[in-house]
Image (cartoon, rainbow, N blue to C red; front, side, top):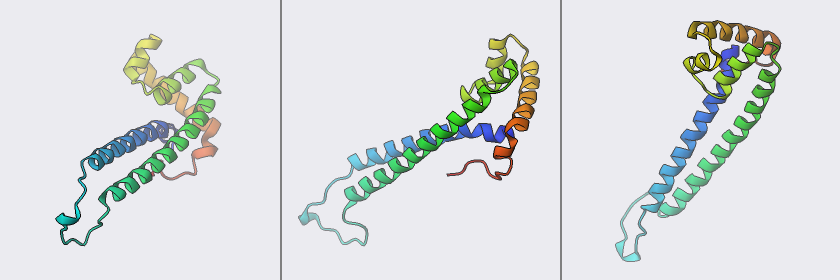
Length: 148
């Protein structure tokens, strides 16, 4: 795994949490639209008779998964921030923090720092190389970007 892939996991986890929360919202919406069958309305089916219970179970599972994502995200984000904070060069710190923690584009970073877009890309490349030298042993052996 490269330094860029490692640092990008923070944003990926954040997106995964957003997607999971969206999924929970959709399941809750469906659960609110389930009607209860009366005994008189019996229909011969092989599916579950407790559709509301099934939806509640699904929501509980999704909320548990979302909480696991949040826990992983919080731990990883804290670790990455501590690693970026220890970068010796101020420009490296600023670019990595803005890109991987604040999720800013290179255009925005360049504007904020008063540099050209191309200069920010050069700083970013040098910062990644320095980050890899400092912390590569922590993540280089990992083969896959976070998959949950």
